Image 1 (cartoon, rainbow, N blue to C red):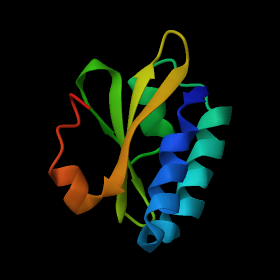
Image 2: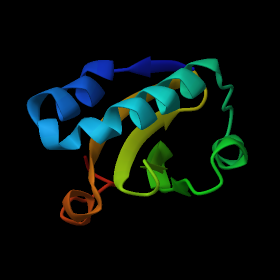
Image 3: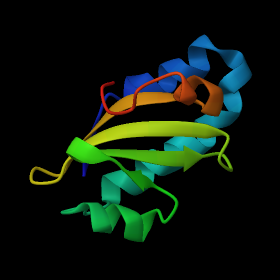
Image 4: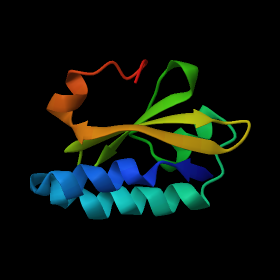
Length: 100
């Protein structure tokens, strides 16, 4: 997979030091996703059983023991993932994962 906007992940912990504990789990997810082959949503679920598959190619991943949420829009045909959001559960609850 090609993952676009790694800077979104980095900005999360660099701009908010209280979220520094998200760095290693987020980078681990990124490394895994780069090596992944996800031609369909079922392949995401195979790799990340706790991921939530949403409409229109979006997937929600739990990071750091379910402390953080990561929303990625995936173009399965082109094997591209675009990071749309990373935040705490409280921040995630205030967003619409289908439209971000």
